[in-house]
Amino acid sequence: MSIAIVGIGFAAMLVLMFLSFPVAVAIIAVGALGGYLMYGMPLVDMMGGVIWSSLNSPSMLAIPLFMMLGELLLRGGIADRMFDALAVWLARLPGGLLHTNIATCTLFSATSGSSVATAATVGTIALPALQQYKYPMKPSLGSLAAGGTLGILIPPSVNLLVYGSLANTSVGQLFAGGVVPGILMALSFSIYIFLVHGKAGAEAKDLIDMPLRQKLALGKYLIPPFIIFGVVMGSIYGGLATPTESAAIGVVIALFFVGINGRLNFDLLVNCSIQAAKTSGMVMIVLVCALLLNVTISMTGAAQAMTQWIASFDLSQIALLFVLLAFYMVLGTFMDAMSMLVLTVPIVIPIVIAAGIDPVWFGIFIVIMCEVALITPPVGMNLFVVQGVRIDGGPYSDVIKGAVPYVVIMMVFAIVLMFFPGIVLWLPNMLAGR
Image 1 (tube, rainbow, N blue to C red):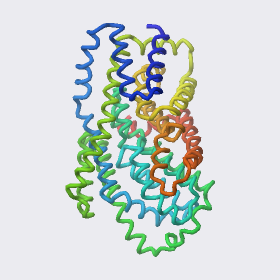
Image 2 (image 1 turned 90 degrees about the vertical axis):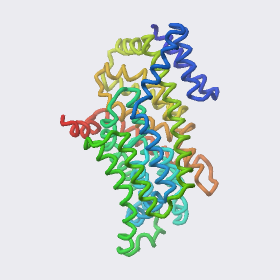
Image 3 (image 1 turned 60 degrees about the vertical axis):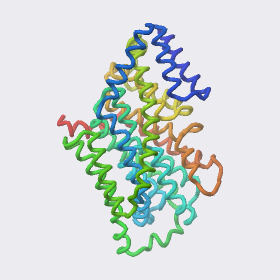
């Protein structure tokens, strides 16, 4: 199969997306039509069996369960109390509540799994306080948009679940691989705030001067997210539960804490279930279409052709990764994170494995590039979300200008991971006894 045909198929998908066709329609049109043109109806007929065998897996159930977990934290009052508890401790740092934005996003990410949900939740909670204490709007919006991206890196992560399905890679290993990079990236964001926006928040005197007894009393609101994260991740890494089982346990624990808060009622359960179902349905439809494309790619030899073509350039691992870095940077400017993930993984994963790159490491790398896509204009989803929850009606350009420094930080961080892959692989290898 020629490289030209592969390029034509990829370009056709991009054109359909530019014409405002749904991502799933664009992918399935090229995947199914391409398979039909190459091999006729027999290949199209076998796609149903492949899809059923791929989706008839307990690991797929983890996606709606983690979505439900995030909805319960948002609507059950756990997330807003989490922000209040962190604010009284971090307000005295240079940068004040901007650090609280990052810390709350980090903690919410550790129990949610969705970047958009993280940005929307923390943005809704934080912006009134940021305006009350007269924080500059651009860095405030930028920290919320960038902090929200941690939702797909710090486990549990829906994007890592999808990548694991497409790349046939252990979800547990991927979750372990995201822990250290996620924490280090959050610290990198805070260091930037400390150095550049250290003078922000001078008027938050009541938070800074709050008595220690009150601060300790607010600290109890950090207990639920820490328990949920500890039980969910601990049960996976301890070999006590699969990711799906741990997600179900997390939902039960979240229901318990929401009940303690007095928020548990029928309406809340209905609203959480509907929203989780909508989000999960979107993810699953795109995933199904990506699996159909995968069938065509496998049967037509497109992956092998791309691998041989890339190998003909005799690139080193680092050179190949820099090419992919530039490729994903450009792609992320006009494509959302999930679409970028499902569209490219079936083609790229055989190439990186042939180059000797660890698929767990590459999963973290590609998710970081998806994070960049979330805050890269003009189609950065988190930029739209944060702009949508702001209440002052300011221009969209404020969010873009506030987020640009974090794009640079993420790109530098991705390059650091190229030269020091142990940052990603240390924890998975340790847990696996290697």
